[in-house]
Image (cartoon, rainbow, N blue to C red; front, side, top):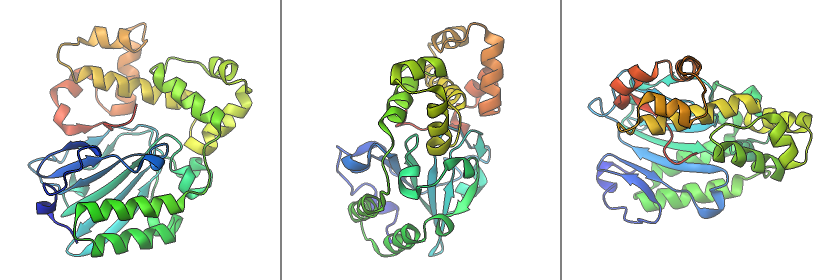
Amino acid sequence: MINRRDIPAYRNRQRIIFGNDDCLYIKPHLALQPYISNYTLTFPTRAAISEQYTVIPHGCGTLILGVNDQQIDSQIFGPATKAARVGNQATSFDQLFIVEFQPAGLHAFLGFNQHELMDQLFPLELVHAQLNQGMLALLETVESVQELLLGVDQLFLRAILKTCPPELTTSTKTIVNRMGNVSLKQLSEEAFYSERHLTRLFNEYLGMSTKTFSRLVRINQALRLLNNPANGITQVHEATGYYDVSHFNRDFKQITGKTPQLYRQKMSDFYSEIAKF
């Protein structure tokens, strides 16, 4: 089992997205990047994570493995559309290893309709017993970050069940590239598939409608702009395609739980996925 001292020893800069003495955000194997956004290895402390620490939803699934006193807890959080306050849970563990999936990425490993998992937390053993066994064995036996990442990559490469339909991949990329400002009708016309077909694919593979996913993308883009103090709130709502500030404030609060003004005052209490979108 690895410890905090192993983090500085990992030096593969091509895979590191961000890192410090307590955590690493790491790219998965190249062949996994259509399905997995990043791995996170962290040793949480109350100094770094407050009780109010809240994860902003991004419409994607997350695998969370927590280590505490040699015990490992493994949970799958389905495609997220609601903010989740996780501060107390996160700091109850000595170590966390997190896998954040791409849009529709979790479906590639589970193979069933993701709407059943939306905003729900399940034991990994319940939805994928083999992957759960492999992950637990890795965390118990590895002695370096390099060994952990190699093992996790291999587990997920072997676990791929099915790929995402190309018309869905194209449509999700279009939504992201246009910061959520695209209608189902436009997606249908550009993908050359019916609105009904795309709606079915989004519900099965992402667990939500195109409208819901677009809204999440839009707010996550707004968060990135708000993180820059040079951007005023009016600039942000205009840049993300909102025609009036009241509509922007309403959507922002429904997804994050706070108004844009309150978010700016407490930015350290929020996490929005850094490698996606």
